[in-house]
Length: 164
Image (cartoon, rainbow, N blue to C red; front, side, top):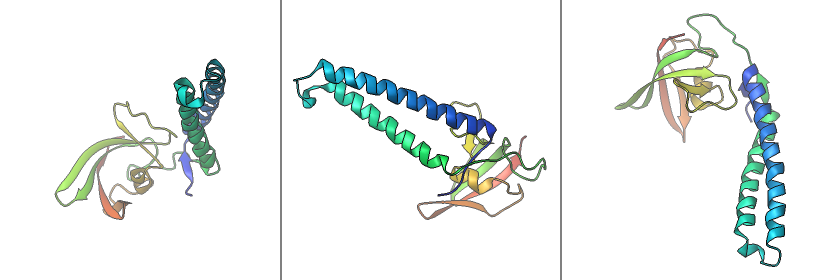
């Protein structure tokens, strides 16, 4: 597995989320016990509250397990360059993503070291660990051969400019 790159904020965010999920897991376990006790004798197949609680518990446990796997590879990275030519954490960029010769989309993005991006951010956040993030991190804005692959399909990236 590759390193999971985060900045200090992303590192703190990781542990806050892990602790939050552990607390939820304990809460769900308590609710599950109550749901089970409320319907003793009904049989598990008739106890919808218990089934729903168990489904939620499995989702949370799966997320916790993924995070614990990530923890082994968690690596804090700091801003490495103040150069206007190098793409680094916190930079806001205007890019073109070239899916095909006639399928090109333009985006304004912010490269972030967060563990979890904010999907509601005004400027689209791109994690260092995403395919786009890994492909542009510490590259020159003049590099014309930036790409990543999705299902063996090459996706090109052209940096138009660095806004910040």
